[in-house]
Image (cartoon, rainbow, N blue to C red; front, side):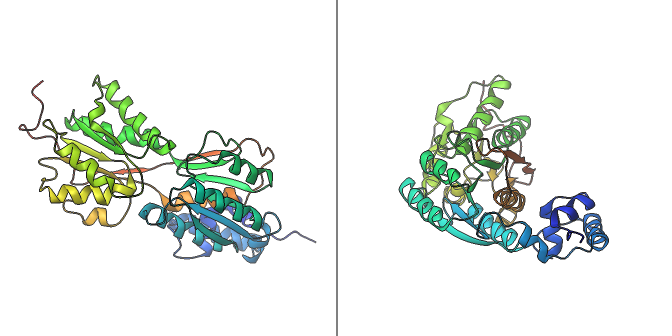
Length: 344
């Protein structure tokens, strides 16, 4: 008896990823080029593929449930990520248990204990900076652990799905330097997180490569929760020698920071150029439209679900998958005016 074709067979025959096949199966769940769609449909026909086989095939362990543990669902980036993860999982016949830590290590530890007791097949998470032991215990239970967006070096068993944060910060900084900016404010997440560290490192390395001495007074590493984006923006604007450009690399604080900018009456980009790490539709509606670093939440979700449901021979060494962020230049960045260019 011939073994029924699986979603992996279809993906291989069509020369696409499993995520693309799932999008074809669930029309409207994500972008698929016309050529890729046609190849997938042809492969399904050639292989006599039946979609229900995929859900049975991709179950790992005794359940068809994965946990999604996010730091803060009020963060628009994480909210979009959650929506994409649920959509991707359901396309595979898998349920999602959504929990949030609110950036609190104690709540994270409690959530991990709950997920461990439910024996979920895998956990996709944006971890806090602690609880390495609890994450390791989850792995010891043969539960796949996938860190998305940020990760812990102390948990090597976890798979990691992320944009290249250091490279993205380099690209944003390089853009402003090419326009002629030399005093660039940089607002990012806390240095206790890999996201905050990598973006800050990328920014500083780019300045150094251009012979510019980094100024600690222009750096703001602030929490993801709360309203400190406004305070960070205000403190930069109120300096005697304010920056001519600012990169808001803390997505959670972007709205707060931009609100303070608007309240201060600063004209963008004639008085201040602005780059934001975000892919929210409102960034295009902001006046002027914002130059952004677009994080591909759908791809992050698709790869995270794939890894959470997969088997890995060596459970002590996780896999790292980097997806490419897109730098979109709009109207919020321009060359600094003569009045704001430093005299040196």
